[in-house]
Image (tube, rainbow, N blue to C red; front, side):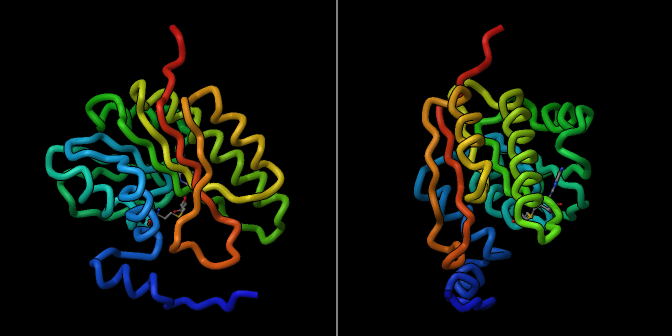
Length: 200
Ligand SMILES: C[S@@+](CC[C@H](N)C(=O)[O-])C[C@H]1O[C@@H](n2cnc3c(N)ncnc32)[C@H](O)[C@@H]1O
């Protein structure tokens, strides 16, 4: 079994690059590999606390772009092009506020959502899947046609169901891993591009 190393090479690489966390390093890798953001882009980040992905996104969209994060936990962030809202992403009022603060349809929705883990694998997987489907439902409202979504998912019972839910919403849905994911981890990312707006 792979030995857990809290400070492996990706931890140090993240530090060298001035990235706030290992989580930030993973997103940085996905954005670079798939060219998901251009300067001036509008992005919504779901499950944004404590702010590692927000820092990467703020840098990628630049001063003309805008990033709006949502998390149950409050996030203090100093970047002028980032707003973090405290609340549940499933709450209609928070969703409406995020869309309003973004100032237009999103080019990209990112989700690093994780439920509070109970330690009971089946229950945790089911709650993770529920959150991801809620994130997808919101992304369908927030994204422009042709927009993209990057979402953390976990291999497990509900994985096929999740991929099937993404299918009709995007032209392409591709599961991908990052080099910075811990060896042996069940974590992977769904990369969905070519958002198809709902008719009507
Ligand atoms: C792994 S952390 C995100 C780390 C973040 N991407 C970063 O780089 O700092 C997962 C987050 O999902 C949030 N979360 C879980 N359920 C949520 C919900 N229903 N609405 C909003 N955020 C939620 C948790 O509060 C937690 O902060």
